[in-house]
Image 1 (cartoon, rainbow, N blue to C red):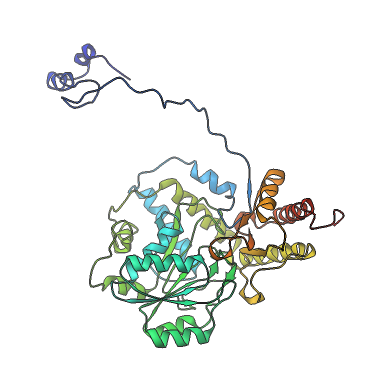
Image 2: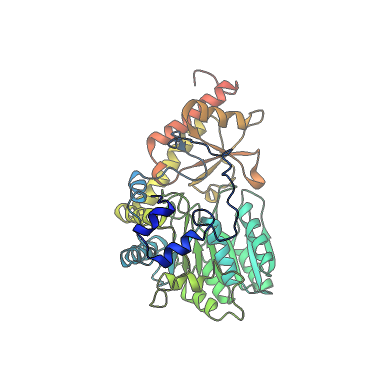
Length: 423
């Protein structure tokens, strides 16, 4: 409510009246010019309207209705005890999701990119060597980040569509003796599933920490942080967890936590300093204000992790596997083939489909959106123009969505004359 100056005497003592009367206009400071407001950009847009889409690309996936409902709940203060209890619930849910008993789980405020940068900024010190398994865009991006943090970057490379072998790891670890080995479990740009079998043990033999990007895989395929010797992993909220983007699940092993504690110099970031963030999450048996957590986003993740627990990881993994099988049964009948040559190299959550010769890949994507309101995606990084990417993740991993995707491919190919109309 706006009260004119002559009404101030009704509400404020004389000293406050003198203060407010000394201002130019409203709450401007003395001497600040308050010109007429420029109304040129004042647009009354009305309530926001968002079209319905079925997001079957590499992410985000559609959010579960319960998760969207959770985001509409009243805000709490970011240090209020009821909100801190929600944070505790999230940490326990992450322990189940990552299959770890580690105390050191939390959400990084931000998308998976923030989780990625937090892992690099905290676990690598200037001059240390990081060995990166690069078979797509995410290894390349980590290499760029690590260079900016002063690391000695060494990349193991394999052609897009391929994965790394045990021999690759043995040879490179022995040769370079890195402080960190970075791998992507589900490389969403090329559709590759990197096996982690025995990698943790190899790393620990060489005093190396194992960091795994699980953004496109966590919740969709098996992941056992403790059993597999993973020292740090981060993921995304908007893929297999069926939540909106904005929070990155994150975990450290005890080994990785000690590395952070014993750094020679502080991390070259305040926003992503995991000691400070961990203090907010109660890692040190107290609560320290580091930043205002995204309250509603944390509600969403708390609900997402509840849904994971209700379904159970084994059932969740099976559902994703079944839906990927259904997808490929349909696509193969259309003459389409997976991009990774070996079946064991294919990730089931972000499926890469070879673009046949003579097919306009972008036109097929546009037709899927225009005709079916289904999002499909083209390639990314090394796979641009070579593949379509189809997400089978979270709430979208349901039979009716898979059939809609197959129908969209069939229709798109028929309209380009690449498939008989009767098929």
